[in-house]
Length: 328
Image 1: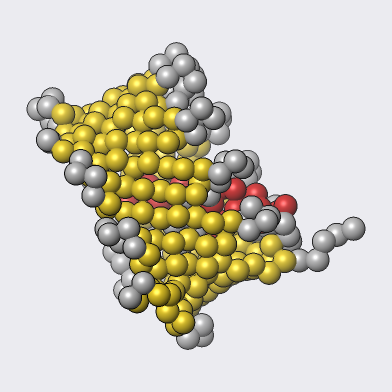
Image 2 (image 1 turned 90 degrees about the vertical axis):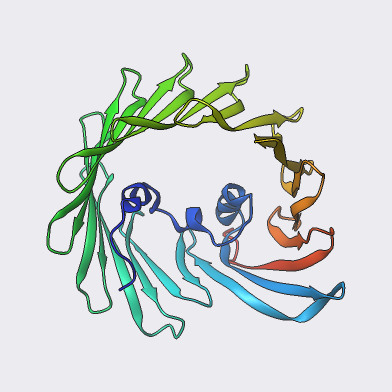
């Protein structure tokens, strides 16, 4: 059995539409890549990882994935060392089935099927096992404004496992979210507040009628988030994150303070707005993580280099592309 039915499925359900949003790469420009798929007529993208030994890149590589796309830039297949995924769409371009095979590419592991309502909004996800048996389903109900108001997880026997109930304010922002167990009891409640520009300003999480945590957010005049504070159940600060932006309005730093220390993520970009480096350091200026990104003439990611704490190359991932012929 692949997994049991967790509450997490309720949250995963809303994020299962496009494979491009579930890339296995750590590439920070996946939105740009998705656009690039259509603009550059990409037929396939593959990634191979090389490791460094004694400062030299090794000749052996590991294939991380091979993704294939149709001429509309929609993913139709993803092959990795662990599994092969086949994507099937309806005439409206909506994902209707994901089939997962093992590394031999022959034996099916499980299958996810998707159904949509008359508004073409996802209404049901059902997972089936190796022998075609139903494992679970997740269904959604919407109000006349096409807002999701209920999401339920049903097990293979048809029994309710958990449910989310959503409430909205007059500006159509989600105001609260109740998580119910199989007996219909509210076990977790999330309360959201917004500023006049509809930016989220606070999130309060209540479990068993007790506030367990709270988050507050502040924004600048450009509506960019500049601070997030997480509070413990007793009102003390758990951590605080401060965001800074460059002259072009792109995120340049995010510093998280917790206890007596802090960690900082800093980002660099090229003239086209592509991220070229992500660097994470601590309050002693020790490198915790560093990745550099390099692009080809089409603006597509071609190389990603990861460094160790000594600022030495540790591995490099190279990306390769195959293109459809240009339509003249």
